[in-house]
Image (tube, chains in turn purple, blue):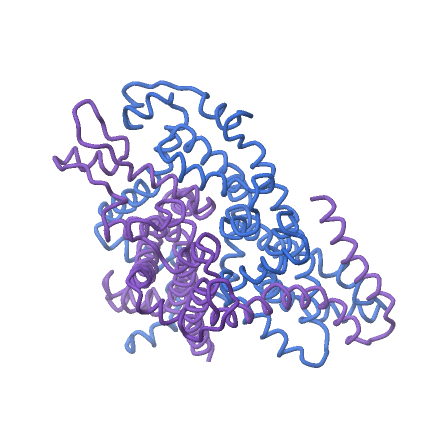
Length: 311
Length: 304
């Protein structure tokens, strides 16, 4: 570790030393030096691999034979792959709206309340822990014990079901219920992010607008509908799209909780299984490209919204 | 709202004793007990899962396996055996993985911070051909999902003989962080008044001394904000580590915990204690530096 830090300190030191030797106002030379390490790393570490993956997605499992669009055909026709696509759609359609909705509701509820920062920390804390730890936490919530005498439930959800007079359920095995239970984990993590951003946006609404609306006799629902919501619209769009992009790429939760079994697989996890477990690098690459293509429209929409709100 | 417009000219709100807010107002006019109740319900729902696992991590193995963690309140039994077990040399030896996580994370935060501040400075205060195109290109690289880069990167690392060393992780994490880091730091540097830079220039300072003497002190909050971001992201990462860190010698805690969850999914005494060991560092960082973290979050999303 120290070797790595030393080496990079040396590189940066060399850049700075060289830059300080450049006399006068010759920006070009200094700029080139300042940007060289970054451009090099991005070129080798992001750009080249990205292009290479697109190229490899047209090859077979061992990357030795060109097979055209076969990998893509498989993704969109194979029964197993279709479940992967369906689950990914569930994730992207449910998570952003649920997390944003809960975050917004909570931001409004605790705004100006006593112990506001403590209340916010409770919701925000899951953001700082790993998806893996969150998965362990929730696996315990979903834990199932067969319904026999002398056997007690140790997972809270099943215990609540039993207390309510129901039969315990193998929560992580029942499809498609299990996919939604995994989605709950993502919502649990992301609601804090939504709450923080939206709370800041709410606090930025000018007082006089609120006062004016109040003097006009606007009720609480009207206040939310006609004052709060329009004012924070750009922030809502940013939060929705950020969570949607994060959700598309989610891998850790599925990997840790079910390993993609019991029909819970999603594109990001299937990419990993195909590339590194089943060693089908061609299909894996194609899945990564599909993921990339799905992200693009969300980002473009986001940028267009930003442009419009700035105009 | 059209009828409300003239009213805004009368500064009523300024004379108000307490500050107003749309949300607080909406809430107060709603039946307030219900609003408070809803807030408490959400807060409890969000806290219970972690709380249950925390309690479990201190219960004896047999108690965890036989009864739910809530029985702790009627029959409290406390032990540190679970924590001892996860640190045991013969067992899952979490101490080594903990160390690996640290070794992976520290350079992965320091390196991109150094490189990104240089690049952000160049974009903000230097003139060179192709500046805007390059900046937009770097910004656009943010949309590349990591998954798209992993297979070719692994092939590159194998060719370079870096496979199964910490270098794969340091280089990958640093590279992936650069686009966002440059963008965020650029936003901050741009807001430094040009007069400050000009004054330093007139005094004869070059780009290097301007960077260190004028900008660096002003940049500390931005560097802290991004540093915490990057720290949490690297510490919590599973995908990059799982791809490049094949052997246990260089795997971080997330990999070990994920493996445990798969192979010993019912060993709740190990899983609960292990999960808490892995949570301690990021939660501490988060609580200590919360203010910077939130600021970094807002700079990245609302300002756009």
